[in-house]
Length: 338
Ligand SMILES: [Zn+2]
Image (cartoon, rainbow, N blue to C red):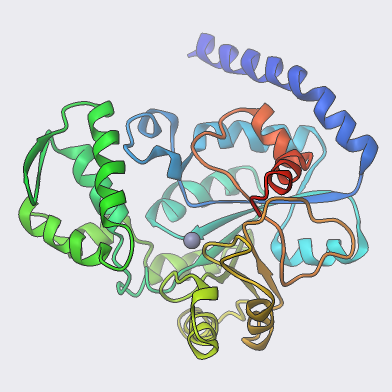
């Protein structure tokens, strides 16, 4: 155990030394900046390595190390509420972490980790998840592949005995389901494989009872992330308002909180635009976050906050420093991926 810990500490020290020039250069250019980071699910390293859809999960063993790194480097970890205040005054260096959608692991693994570090975390809840109205087909497909050696598809059974075959099957099946038909395809898959859809949903979904408990935690900030996880720009103005306001109303109704902040699902420029930022304001939110990579600098519009999505491949301080320094935002803009 001792050797393992000292190995991890050595690796951390090595990567900190490697990234020092990047962080020093960014500090010289802008000592005042904020970086909002978002992810969906978290799993400790041992489980993470086995997950067929592991890119969707942050390795929480790494996140644990990274939170320590941020504190040592003098970054303040703040809520979105605080981030929007600071973006007006351009004060200090800050990071926010938001968890989008909200699954059971948000309650079981992610929030306890932030609590151990005594730093806040923001949860953007898709209310269809605790309401049980949004089918979590990707989670159900992944769970089935993880726990079976073979699965039944429309054209026959396939063998998935190891990680490589499970991962390949996940991407192939998920690609073939993606879109409006996903829920229907998933229901058929459950039927063919003897999966209890309701039990599978609650194995992965966060519940209102869990959210009620989290609401009372001073380190947890809860905001909205639509009712059905819709791509907002594709909806009529009424449909968009329903997604934003309906979600906020439901959070107020179930949790009795003002739900001041919102995050767009699919937050790139084609997914949400000027009309949608105005709808966020009309729905009563004080801010709206996108997934356009970049930094929050002084004078930032609170209804189009940039956020960097972090995922399974973000498992080193060097990669994270590219977000903190604004390099990933710059690269995305240069490549036209905004
Ligand atoms: Zn989402």
